[in-house]
Length: 370
Image 1 (tube, helix red, strand yellow):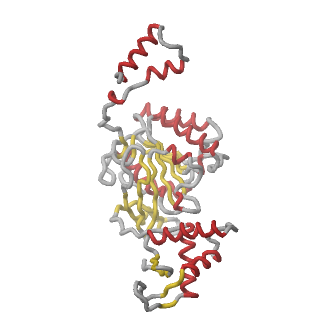
Image 2 (cartoon, one colour):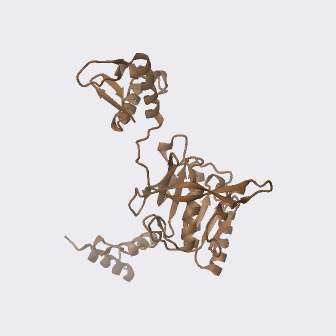
């Protein structure tokens, strides 16, 4: 077997001498970039903004339901990065931050005012909507702005865009061309400034499907962090990491802080992030599985009985057929085809069994305690 590297070098010499087989200029350019596997060495040093969470010059999406505290979370990250202080036990490579508060309203200023030791903190806020989809004007202006500020204060570590919906102009976040244009402008912003670009976004109607909008956003994202709430605890979890381990979590509460008194003497408050212990997590369901579980509850209420039978607990149980009939009444599947409805039921019931919401013995099924 010939040596791969010798083959590549031989072709390059032939190209340089003009004796190589005929190839297009683009093919010759590709040839100049070809590297054999044996020449690759591990890159042990990685440039990061927050080690293990955010890489320098990369792109991230923070998403969650409305009012889950996305802006508070992003501001907490931003102030630690701007101050170069450790976050969640992780090293931070600090630097100036630009926070584009496209959806902040009057409350955003109060959230910034609650930041401790903000005097001299290189955290800059731009409280205005931008169009990073339908026009290149705002993208060029942001690049010029960051470059100007960087000439005065040093290279920017982070640019936050809050939110995606208020930064697409008249663009449609569900349309491939519009989301593609938005992502390309984010890439331009990253390439021109060297900053990590963070986008604040929302979940769709079905939270199990992640951030709403066209899938090209997730494909382009290096880091995806989902915020969920259990009681008063909010959990940030890294759902996607292109070059790092996913699954890291950060739990926190939003604690009320008084900023002062208004003209009537009433307190003016906002919230700040207070790290806390993550709660024991219970499995969650949504979509078809949630509909099927609600149908089971109704089937148990209407048709459930207690059985004195081996393998069956002393609680109300119901037959699989009655459960499936109730799922049809609940609209688990909109299909008129019987086999399609059966497949939808089988998928949803498997999810519920796997997550231990229900148990089954032969043709009987019952609800587990959660």
